Image (tube, rainbow, N blue to C red):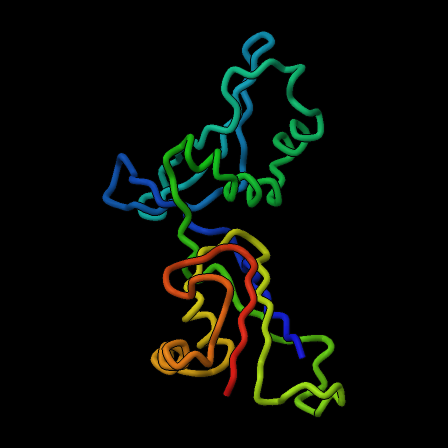
Length: 191
């Protein structure tokens, strides 16, 4: 039987960027945007606050863009300080690259292993082997996690035990389980 695990963001991630006033290297998104018009050209920034001193910095979103080329719905969301737009833009690789920032997802996500179709461990009657666990891991956002840690947390096992199962061939996946991953994957655990 296939189980579905979901990685769910619980809050906005911290932004890794050096503060020019203090020694902090973490910023938090304020959820506020600044839009500036110079004749027919627009600039837009996401305002972020230093986690150490509270100083404000700007992440560039639009630079000298013609007003007519900006989607009016996007402009309304910028003016309305849409928090969902903040989350979308923070995860945009182009915005991260343009501003030379990275995201720190520490303590900003959780693993949801509850399955609405799960009947509490009672045999489903479909002939599936209770000793074989097939899991599909889905990401609610592009959150880089270590699959070994994720599987250990979801199964309630130690990471060393997961490593041993991988070496023994009892834990298999189509993706490399070492390192970090931020896209959906599946794995099979044979006990």
